[in-house]
Image (cartoon, rainbow, N blue to C red; front, top):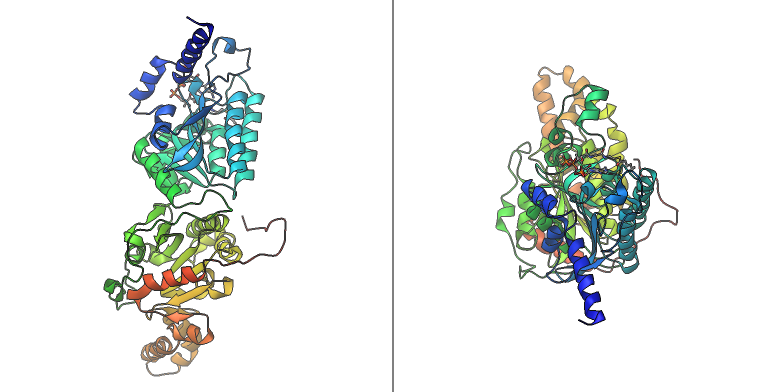
Amino acid sequence: MSLMQKKLDDLMQKRDQARLGGGQERIDAHHGKGRLTARERLDLLLDAGSFEEFDMFKTHRCHHSGMQEKIFLGDGVVTGYGTVDGRLVYVYAQDFTVLGGSLSETLAEKICKVMDLAVKNGAPVIGLNDSGGARIQEGIEALAGYSEIFLRNVMASGVVPQISAIFGPCAGGAVYSPALTDFIVMVKNNSYMFLTGPKVVKSVTHEDVTVEELGGADMHASQSGVADYAAENGLDALAYVKSLLSFLPQNNMENAPVVLSGDPPDRRDEGLNALIPDNPNEAYDMQEVIGRTVDNGDFFEVKAKFAPNIITGFGRYNGQSVGMVANQPMHLSGVLDINSSIKAARFVRFCDCFNIPVVTLVDVPGFLPGTNQEYNGVIRHGAKILYAYAEATIPKVTVVIRKAYGGAYCVMSSKHLRGDINYAWPSAEIAVMGGKGAVEVLYSREARETADPAAFLAAKEQEYSDTMVNPYIAARRGYIDDIIEPARTRFRIIKALEMLKNKRDTNPMKKHGNIPL
Ligand code: HXC
């Protein structure tokens, strides 16, 4: 055997050892919990044969607390780059079989290396998380490692898309790197995120709570809004990440890929002409408007379970990727509240970072009144959505489907916030407030002086509705560019987006704005 052959054999043996992570026994235990290993996840995410790995031989530098006996090649994370549907992505996948995927100084260095490359080369970073947090034996070095990652998350924000998938525990400081990324996907019954676990919660607040209740995928997808999607299993989570990537550009200097679908741009949809109920207080499903207008009905929703009174997600019009924001009359009549404002604001800002036009479908009776909302800061949080639409320089196309009352009219990508094209259906109700409220303010005193106050107010309400609640007053001012036939909504949106393809708009020079956080 030549010397070279011996060296090659040694290399292969070391590679095999690195690929085993924490060893077969731990891999089996991991599988036993219904979880895939870091490498299996990467295999499922990336195009076959595309993965190029870095730092397979890297090991930690901790020589106390018995750590000199616990050295694993690769040190608990698999890093590198590959392609998803032929497009470059940088990846890291934490390996729970190695010291619980805990984060050491060297493990952080591996993650930072791919993040730096992603920013320099303009491609998304996808982190597959499965970690017990900072490696306790290392202490401050591990904390320093986390901080280096956080810094890079912030620097990369708005430069390249960052996506986190959570497959197992994500505790302590481990939650903050995902929190700084653009999207978080969690796996139901198998992943959780929290700052402190149930035992600490019990000792501090005396609450009895399970990991699932405290930080499970369903909770974060529906209550806290931390997660964008609660996947059924690991496969589902990775499929979600892949679909999401298909709507996104590689970086902030590029546009999203055009994916032609064969769906004719001028396809009419007669069903839309019959969608709006005669009774203005009756709900209809805004998903219908989205589904019937986007290419092949293909809509990719984000944060579906959180604040469902507003819908956010991606679709395509004639192949062009867009962010959709739409009030949902099926939930709380589509009202704007704290959570829906935060949800939509963050989504619009993401689209603005990455040159993705936003199409806004409006049916909103106003902001939700009440002490609960006021005490929790609906003024501050409601301002976020206003801020996001106003600062966004991407193409903004808006269609008022039905209600656009009061402040909510202003907020939902109105002309006054630099909406580029603002259409309305003939069913649009654009006014400062609904007829009942307006008449009570304006005519209560006069009504009391009549023989039949109720009849008087009803007549006034009818008069107000006939004259003030329609799209024509706004159209007369040019705040609405045209009143369109619902059946032709798809075509009109496509024409508008094509017209706006080369839009350039800027904001005043500044270090950064001060969005009401
Ligand atoms: C070192 C760790 C570890 C850690 C787990 N391990 N977490 N080693 N540092 N943080 C090791 C375990 O000792 C064990 O090794 C192996 O990984 C598997 O862990 P188990 O506990 O057997 O697994 P499981 O029962 O599934 O429990 C997983 C777990 C639990 C819930 C994550 O390990 C746990 O509670 N870990 C600590 C979580 C935590 O408090 N993290 C916060 C750190 S402080 P052996 O060899 O025994 O099998 C932090 C602050 C950062 O993150 C702040 C930045 C801002």
